[in-house]
Length: 169
Image 1: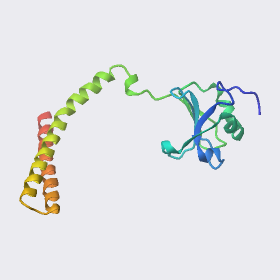
Image 2 (image 1 turned 45 degrees about the vertical axis):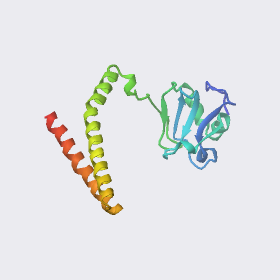
Image 3 (image 1 turned 135 degrees about the vertical axis):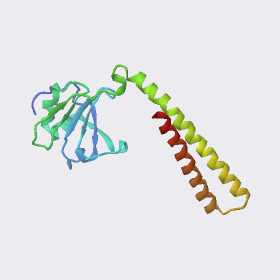
Image 4 (image 1 turned 120 degrees about the vertical axis):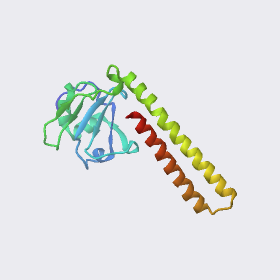
């Protein structure tokens, strides 16, 4: 193996998945995670957080020496490839809403706009609850109470949401 050009030390751990550690799947995406301060190597499969494992960076690079070519990958960028023999393609990080100027004000405005919707849906739920309690006091079956309460919520909620959309026009 050639020299160690990667900024991380060879004995540091990286984040990956068991299929990569076991050599079952190829590494098809790589990034240096700024938040975790470590390299992350993934396949093209969707994974759950609990499927991530830690492995010595040196062991992963020994399995796939092409990772040494990622030494110049800027922190936060992602390198991807279609297959084990494909070239690495660098992708700039996607800016989040918080990173873009003015988006905090837009987010606050969207939350304020959604308040009437939330209040109206809570009102519909309250009416459905009152209907359910009333039917329970009148000794209706649980199934009838559930059906009528759900129906009341849907009808009232739809009517209240329709009122919002008409007021927006």
